[in-house]
Image (cartoon, one colour):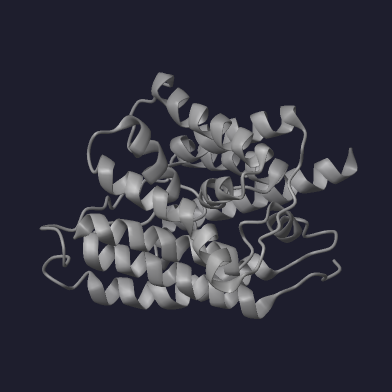
Length: 140
Length: 139
């Protein structure tokens, strides 16, 4: 059942990206163009998402166990370190260059746009390359 | 600042679906959605690999399902600079791994459970994203 849940959750998430137009890099770049022709839509996507997920998260975590698996499985990493800042800054630079982050990038493959496919291949290389970086504590 | 192309209704509506998806994944599978983590682990980690692949498959077929139900064509505008696409994709891939999350993992799952770490990460990638667009518009 957890397999079916994964598929359905992916579909709902993806449809959310389509309806909110976050699948379109132009919309995302409009949000990041704060000092130009600013498009605040992305902030409203986050508000909509947090308004639902945040209260539900706090209710669900009081349950003894999830419905389809035995245990809750998430890290409660609280460390604020250079790794967090450097990584997030590198991600922000890539995000600002094209306007795609991982979710929309993967969904946009369905549109068979060669440019988003090139982006995803480079992103997967980035994921893979991480293995070759040495950090004192790889707590990600 | 000059506000154009603002679509608040569809933004909230899409956001609600994303929030619902995040809550469902936690309720059913006990996991937090973070797409960079799910995609990277599908590639490099055996744990939950099939779950992760199915999640990604769902993301991938979502636009097709949307288009076939509504008849709406999905239009996107994306840069066609090969160099920029390769650099940006690589930075997004490696940056989200080093920083432990992306827009979904830090921005929604993390902030949703009031994680200071995720709040700092989100603030960082948004500020750098805004500066990147600012510099790009200058060049």
